Length: 396
Image (cartoon, rainbow, N blue to C red; front, top):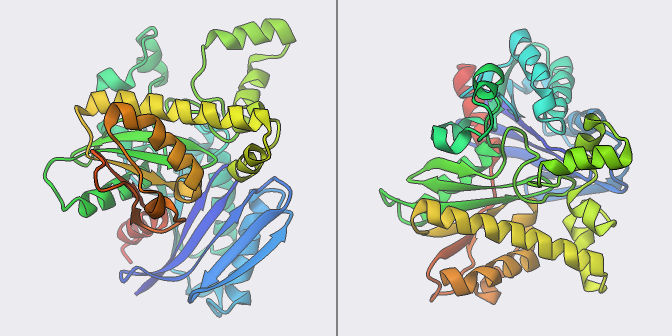
């Protein structure tokens, strides 16, 4: 038996589980939400009992320290020495890493070099790694890359229509992200479909960062994020796909540098930029219910970006067996799921059952019996995949 800490540091969140392997028994789990936003939420759950605190958590380093303190505070472990290994969600591996790896100085240096491709995540991943490495110096640490699952995309999908030497010399191509999540929920969806040999699934990982994937027979054939996590649908603070000429246009109009515009597209756009309220979908929904026009516009744009992507993936897959909603908003956004499926009903014959859809964070079939495509809510479990890879690579 081994105790593996699985760490999933996102742009504004830190999910964690201490898992006893190989039984996959979760000793504790938790999430810190709204990191860097007022009224951060710290949650830890042990034996079905949840402890929750509202406090200001300025950055990921403070979040990691709170997690480690909580393990001993709530007697999950008597000492941090009981932890045998740590698996870290690591976002961008470029073309260097097509699978999970043991984290060492060379890997860390490569991740640092790739940080400009994932400015919201690779630095957060590295902060998590360094904090856990300092607290647990005698155990192995494994990186599980988001980009790995999407390595099955074909060249005509991942190469951009720009001068080819930018791909061969600099590795400029579509990589895709959230791969661990898309892998887990698509495999679980296949099980729920009865393990058919052939399957056509669209997975919707909707959180503060968001992406969709077209998964055919268990393999990713396309995904919405690209060279960086900035591409694809609208997100909490990211613009998603825009006309690239907007960048130089705004540089001329505002006098800002390319780096400043890139920072705006990553950190001040998306839901935050359109609504002027928040990057958190819960705040946007509250504004929507209060009749705030910009909150309403934010939701309309978000839904339209999702259905545009689903429509293109439907064609690429040659049909569709199931749509999966997952991640924070996908698992808890009852209204958002309803609005997305409502927009798909006429073209694809997808229908929700209102009673089935009235659920948060629980695995469920939420489509109606007469829907031509099944719709599932499947809570993602990236942490389990991370723990499995850590145990395998560390020979525990």
